[in-house]
Image 1 (cartoon, rainbow, N blue to C red):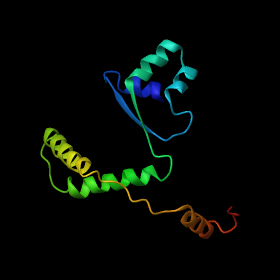
Image 2: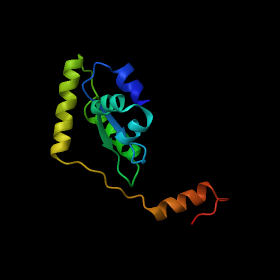
Image 3: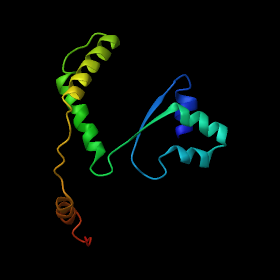
Image 4: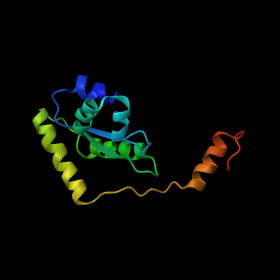
Length: 125
């Protein structure tokens, strides 16, 4: 898949940003297991790896950020792609400057309660 993204889908790109979880196969070393060293290196040098948090739902965090972007920034007509880039960049800069974070409140105990309700036949530890 990474080979396809780098070589076929975006061959002209200098850098491809890759957001992935922390699974042990999600690192540049996996490329060297799949391809010859020269090809693995070509692919790896084009990838910019960003790993999601080890704990917590990174997908929920991404969805929250996209919802904030949509309601705070994209809630109007924007006439051109250049204007869209500028508006989103300004929104992103302001949000980063305020260091907006996630207040994660869902605990392991909450998960066990919820899973017990959803899957009563399953024995939970």
